[in-house]
Length: 90
Length: 410
Image (cartoon, rainbow over all chains, first blue to last red; front, side):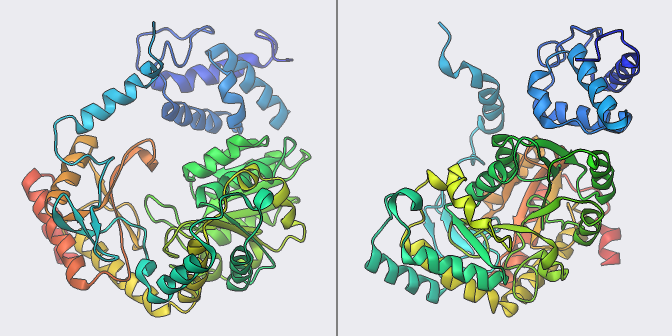
């Protein structure tokens, strides 16, 4: 993966993920790379879909449904989003 | 030790919250006796059926019944196997030929249900280098079908051709075929796809195919009942039409039709086709005859639309929030799940059966009292449905006080 945390550009994806995720976070959990969507934020499949659609709008990307099962944490989503931004807009 | 069924705990809790206090269970409605296309005995009460998807009312068509009886006598109760492994009956081939002539397409494959048709085609037609661009509000069978396959799955916003365009543009430089997947009419709200806009977007790019699931529009739209592509005169632009026999055609089964010359290869590639028992002869025979009735069903379509308009305007005049424009699916939006369940039970107690549709199966997380109309409904039955909706709303005190204004407009 080219989009290792801290590499140039990944901070944009991280900022976008955190910004969009904020209103979806109904818990008191502080959002960090290790925050898990299901266990920590209580996301169900429906909420995941709504959140991903909002993130797609924010970054002007398409997140294939195929990548979602492998994404458990905020940090993993940042890496995946960065990769897609690079592919679609790079 | 953990019980195997512990993982369904949240499902159990949700079900118990919904049905725990007695009354009709929305998930286990039992029709003890089906009296006609529009009436059944449920819990000892004669009930008007307004949630069957039996749009043209062909389930008791004498021609279809006769064909089914004859085939049953001639070829037996079942095929006891799949067409690939155990053989195709002449009836299956005759039905596929009839689908070709009905849709004016060169190729047709029959599947054992509409769900299996989508599983089959969507899991197989596109491979790991390809992309599926599906409307976000597509049916569960479409979601399940694309998940079974290897293609990259991208959702576009419901009925938003501009969003589709944006997503196709971003993929334009990538190799691989792209398959757009839509429905002609969406099942929950009865809204139509903006087909001409979608076709226009499709035609801007290379290697893009279009598949439309016409489950809820075959029999309903178009002069000959061929669905939205016929109604909009865009049949040549839709590469694959998927459909079902379990709605307007009045029995069970699914199909896909296409003009692609290699289409028949799917028979050797679709696992849900290869490894499923084929439809029994009686079902195949009634489907074939019912397609004739669908094709010349202009009068039925008129009656269906008249009923749709009557119910839509009746409920709208009462002040109900409806999910969409006039269509044979009239979806009443309930404010929340509790109100929806109470309302649905009130309707059942008064002898009206509609579908209770709950999130996540609904768009916008709506709780819906989804009515579907039938050409065989009488005006009196439709009026009765409206009347009972008004009574139940009054009992539950759930109608906003806008009904007077709306009545004045109507």
